[in-house]
Amino acid sequence: MQSLRNKAYRALRWSEQYTKTDMLYLAQGGGWLLSGQIIASLSSFLLVIAFANLIPKETFGTYKYILSLTSILLIPSLPGMNTAVNMASTRNLDGTLLLALKTKMRWGLLSSLASLLLSGYYFLNGNSSLAISFLIISAFLPFIDAFGIYGPFLHGKKKFLYKSFLLAS
Image 1: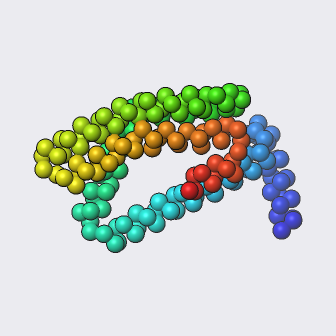
Image 2: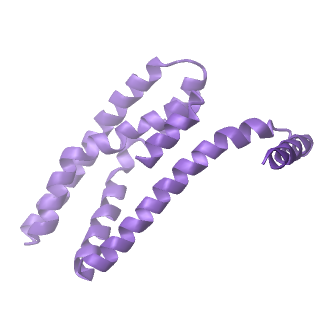
């Protein structure tokens, strides 16, 4: 085991001359991020397999439709602000996190309004299951994307272990 570790160490150090990057740091931090991403992807995959096999295909199709429209409704909630929080946290501007959270929640209210309008549309057209779904979603839309801002903050602080736990949960 130790010889494998030494070989990996030498290979990473050797590759630094070509990549012009601290490969040891990249391998250590990237390992935690990769493990969190794998766990999150695997759990999503297993959930889709379970839903596809355990519920009727019409229900699964409705579920996918609701998720797709929810993703579209989240566009006004400023998803690009995560990059700004990441950069600010690397410069120890920690107050940016709360400011960005409040801003994303305010813009998320626009998403909620759109979801309420969509709910009303489906209610008027007699589709009560979609109307109720989007009514419930409208209550949570300001928070769905806003609280995801903590991941980029942790990334900027180089807290990769905590970020991987956050991704996996």
